[in-house]
Image (cartoon, rainbow, N blue to C red; front, side):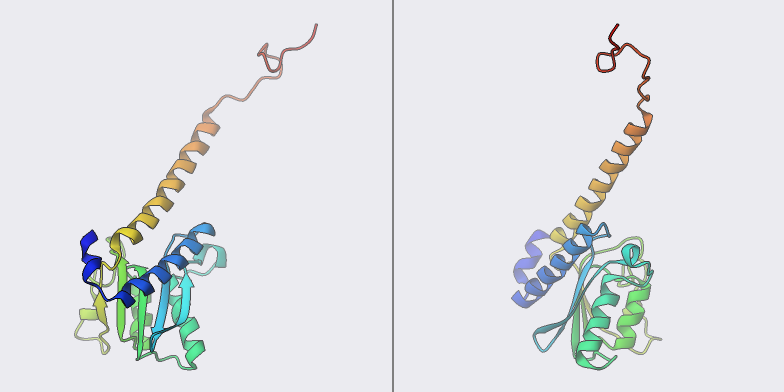
Length: 185
């Protein structure tokens, strides 16, 4: 899949790189590194990154943040001439917001086999009973998007192991005759 990017329009790559920059901001804040940008007429009009933990808001996914910013910037909750670039396949909540906003195109990097709503678990954009169907392109800069997520979760697992090891170490006994705690007689 790494060679897949060679056939993409340069604009898709540039906008996905902007979404990846947002994902890295999320990671620096301790959030799952997902980033998104909304593009209108070749210009980024909304950016967002995951912040549900720090924002105490279950709806604060990257896509939701970017859609809110774009709607505010354009003065309309409908975004029919806009494209959304996101580093991870949107979930059902985000897909619903994308549909309600009438986003023209959704471009994502990494598939999400647990909550993806663009084909991994369900494909809401292919559901004929729904009234809006954005064009969906997946796998754009997939390796880079997956790499950011893998690095984040590897770091979290390492930190959890370190905490577990630290908790398992016996506490130092101040009356023991260890070299660092030896009493003078």
